Every structure is written in C-alpha cells, then in structure tokens.
Length: 410
Image 1: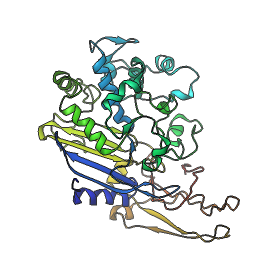
Image 2 (image 1 turned 30 degrees about the vertical axis):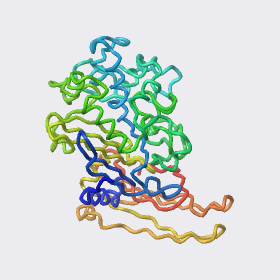
Image 3 (image 1 turned 45 degrees about the vertical axis):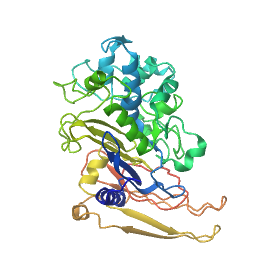
C-alpha cells in the first residue's frame, strides 16, 4: 500500500471546498514506482453521492492525445514529415497545421474529415501554435482500427468505451453537453448526466473516441502509461527523446510531438526545462520531469455537474471564489414543502470584498408524479469584472437534479 501525502490531500480538499472540482485522485512517483497516492471527495454528486477511491475511473479527455494517439502514430509512420491529406505529421503533432482550435463536427452533415478539410484551415501553417482537436482527429483517421491497435498500450483499468457494469466506479462529468452547445450556439445534443461515456462531443458521436479524447483510466493506470514513456518501453529511446524536445522554439508555445512543454506559466514554472506533460478538459493532468525523475498524475472531474464557462475556471480559483452550499432536508416523497438552507462560506477575504457577485440561479422543483422531492438546485456566481461570462459554481447537494436554463446571462 502506497502512502498518501497529507500536504496534497489538504490542498485538494481545500479546492473541493471552494468548488474547483468534486473529487480528485493523484499518483506521484518516479520511473520505478508510485511513492504517494490519494483520493479525496465524491466522484459523483448527482443524482447520488459516491465517494471516490483509488480505483475510480476518470474520463481522461485530452490525455488520450499523447498517451495513445501520439504513441500509435510514432509507431506507425516512417517519416515525421510525410503528409496526410496535405498536412505533415510534424504539423499535426505540434499543433502548427493552420487548423482552427475546434469545430462541433457532429453538428455538420458531412463526414468529420470532410468538414475539417473544408472548414478547418484558419491561419498560415507553421506561423504559430494553435492547440487543436482537429489535428488529432485527422491523426485518428490515419490510424485504422484505432481502438484495437491501442489495446497493447493500455494497462489494467485503462479503456475506451467502459462497460456499463463499471459505472459505479466511474467519475461523472457534465450534466448535458451544455458547454460545447454554448460554444457552438446549438442545442445541447445530450441533455442528461454524462456518466460512463465520453464527455467530448466529437469523440462521443464518433463511437467513443476520435483520437482527441475517449481514454478512461484510473490514476494508477495513467501513471503506468507514463512510466512506459519514461522507460522507453513502447517506443525506442531515440524516438522518445525526439518527441519530448521543443519543436516550436520560435513560436508562441513550446510543443513536442503530442506533448506540451514548460513555458514558464504558473502551472509549469517549478518544472525543469526538459519536463513534458498534458492536460484534459475534464480536469485531468499528467506531468513528467526527467531531471527530477518524477511522474505526477492528477485526475479530477471539474466539469461535474457543470462546466465553467471559458478557460478562466482555475484562474477564478486563484483570486478566490465564494462557495454556495445548498442543503435540503427531504420530507415525505409526497410532501408539499421542502426546507432549504443556503450558506455562503468564508472562502477568501478578497472574494468577500469583491463587487458584482450574486446568485444567478436557485431553483427547486417538487415532482410529485415521480415521487421525487428534489429536482433542481443550482447556484452560480457571476463575476462582472470580467467582460466574458466567467461563472463559477457552488457546491451541489441533493438528488436528482436537472439543469434547465442553468447558464443564462444576466
């Protein structure tokens, strides 16, 4: 049994308290073994509460890109500068292809690849780095029998399209595909709790993965896959070394083949220059620091039960957020009234003093027809000092919950 780290545990609990995510599992170690690991929070908060464990399986989102898609491409191609549909593998793997960041490919009537080729080009290739799912969806097209070819790379407790029987072990994600729907200005294509199926819309509607997302795994499994890279178990050492060096030195972001490299940001400034890693939209992160012989895995489900609008989610945490916790005591299933209590926590002094914070939504609906007392609770806070809608959610208690008109602009 590996030891937990109280310092990490306490920090993660504090982030749960301020609403950053409902659960987290971490694994930290070196090229030989896990040294410390832990699990805090609840991997599901609606419609039921399920405590997280070290065996909890997370939707790893874009960790799929380096750990699976990049690996398969580097195993398959003969020359990094060979072309696929006019794009070199180098351009696709380093996000310098000229393709825009994202498109809701499932909303178009054409095949994904046809839409990418027609609608995807957005800037002169090689002039800048634009992190794009479209790059890796093209790479997915280049790999026939993707899931079958990926199986030798997957340790125990890593998978695509988890079996329904595993659902109780899986961390839930968003209620409805509302974040993508808002970005694409379309109706949410899935209006239910996304639990045990890929959160990413393009991967989900492609059958579970499109090369950009779709990997489900425990923190231990991700750690093991990272070890395989560190120890050059699945690729020759010279290819590993080439993949993790900076191939975009004069551009606005540092990229290897499939990997992000340290840029001096708040998240990476403590890593060595030879470190490499990746993150996933659902709240997952993997960083490897060869100079210190460290592998660091953090899996969360920050998008459960709703995703923050925009990438400022964790920036909002940095300046502090107000917690709103809704506590309800159910009466009889046919009761006509529900007692409710909402309390604001003392998150941080600067937040308490900030102006423009207000409750956006608290809706409670009693559904006697189905004998469910609690149908909907959601509290969101708007930070008006931002020009964009930077919403942060409060803690959610209760079951079951439906999110209707959850993120209405003020």
